[in-house]
Length: 110
Length: 113
Image (cartoon, rainbow over all chains, first blue to last red; front, top):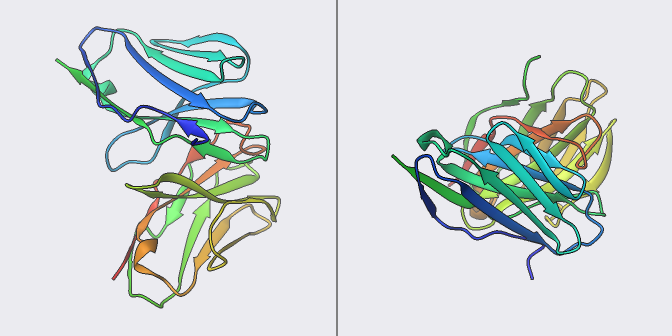
């Protein structure tokens, strides 16, 4: 089992729809959870972080964390073509390392 | 604040050579982490330095090494390059470490021929 798992996609949604990106992790001691966006040919850009169970909202983005289920998700409301990118889930393990998932490719179609 | 800078941006080397990559973190950040990104393996953690000390290390061979200077700038060295070392090498800086938000530099694209 991979430490951080994401569906590679592509996830295709129409413009204006809600995109839902999911991530599971194996280390129950994980404390910090991050979502990065990476455009093709660019470096990852931090878009959300969450430390506590529940939801955290920032503009069109909502991160959801469920530690009991070892599950973290990212919702993007009113998706725009400019949101088309690879979204990387990252989890800070109890060994102090930041472990990344393979990423989910999101395509937002006009 | 200036972001994370990495030099050089592109490198072409041949097998057996060695290479040194440089990273300057965001001012005030004391933690620098290095990652290797390849299409097949994704983003893989190499090591983390905090206040000039290696605090964590990933599962890479000893050919990969690093160091951090008193001004928090960090260098990464790869000796005896192999074809499989071709990758995008990213450094990320944060205030305190991986449990904090990390901010990535633009990366160094290394091609080994």
